[in-house]
Image (cartoon, rainbow, N blue to C red; front, side, top):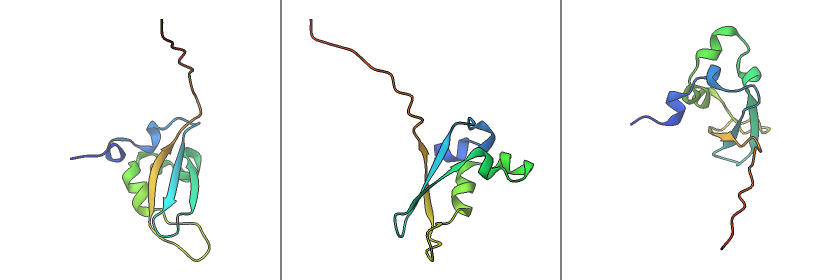
Length: 84
């Protein structure tokens, strides 16, 4: 069974997308963008599960494993509904 992280490559991300990395040990949260991941041209072909495996916590002294999630863009649409 494959997850969404195994199906999405870094190059599939929009420039505005952010990846939220949460430390499994200490709970520290930091964000990655496509530009931060693509320090070299061949890194755009990495799948997100590979990015998650190589990423570590940035909190001082932690270096724990992280959990990757897509951060919402903030594009919301209002649903106006009511009872008739």
